[in-house]
Image 1 (cartoon, rainbow, N blue to C red):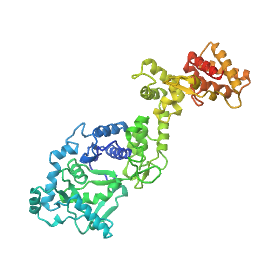
Image 2 (image 1 turned 60 degrees about the vertical axis):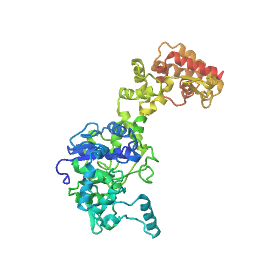
Image 3 (image 1 turned 90 degrees about the vertical axis):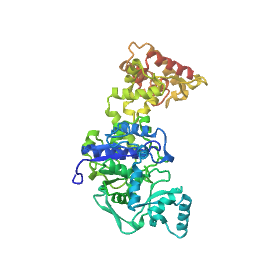
Image 4 (image 1 turned 90 degrees about the horizontal axis):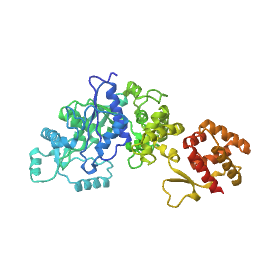
Length: 510
């Protein structure tokens, strides 16, 4: 790409204000793909300057979520690097941001604002009363001397440091996602934003920009919601005498209904929820890569290596992407089916342990049993977390409701009426189960082929359709009308458990 010159350094800088939003992972992934494709560096930085919204432990969750998807970093808070520290509160304690704020004050590009929040709200209200829809703050201190400001500050008057935006002219920048088109904003439409809060902590506008410069970031790749803020950042770079990085604003990810962007409050988009439900990281990697980027107009399933090789900014679309949980679920199912049965067995074992169906850790015998059961549900799994429900009757007792005690725990129950199949009576079902009990008791070999041969012959002998006999046996054995193939199920249940469950069914109908 002609727009890529020299070493590439990008960053992902989440705020530890809660779980990592899946849209944030998409942004991180695009940064990572860009860096890796061009042999550059990907930096992780924690932006924790929002003291009010800080959540303890959120940074660890953020890093765990990124690692789960398969995103690693070359520099970061846990591994260090030449530009550390990589946590903004730690950098603030070193006076890094204050140093450059003082530079801006000295050069006349910033000023101390003593306007209180109450006064600011009054200004907004007065502007609204005059019909001004967009209130743009310009502090009276813009015209003060620095000595005047310092004198008032020395008296203990709280203040913020605000950027002194030009009143005339335009601010222009280039967005690489939009084909290099220039975006221009009239400076009269902008306001004097806060750079340093009264607490002394920098806001995002100041902190990220200083960090990006000091960490030698070449491309700032972030969501397009930051486009309106970019003119302020362009001006800050100019005022500090620094070269601005290239700007890459990625399309937002809309909700599945297209009504607004994905929301922490309205949507189930916590990244850790997906691994808890049993989504494969490779499926999530693939799906997220398609949220705003495509290789062509038809290719969707791609390996991590293929995506990395093919990724380019030219194929990033400026139009919004749309989150489709059903498509993600379908893609996850496809990835599950690409795994071998043994791989699936290994991956569902923790879910079975967490559900209390097998030990934690699982014994060798339990693992072997899970491997035997897995082929029965392999093609039905869309999420690994569905495995416990699909397999639980192999591990828990199954009883008709009229035989289960009120306090029975860990027992699966079913309505005896479920045993009676279409166009059969209770008497016919009872006779069929009794005949099946005798046939299976006498069976010399307990395997799928022997079970199928014997039960198909029995259905013919009884004058029943196979489905009528098999349906009753399925309910008796599993407590369900829908379950894995009958003969595989009975073989895996074993002779003793199968005959016990049939006997219970007979008793329930008697």
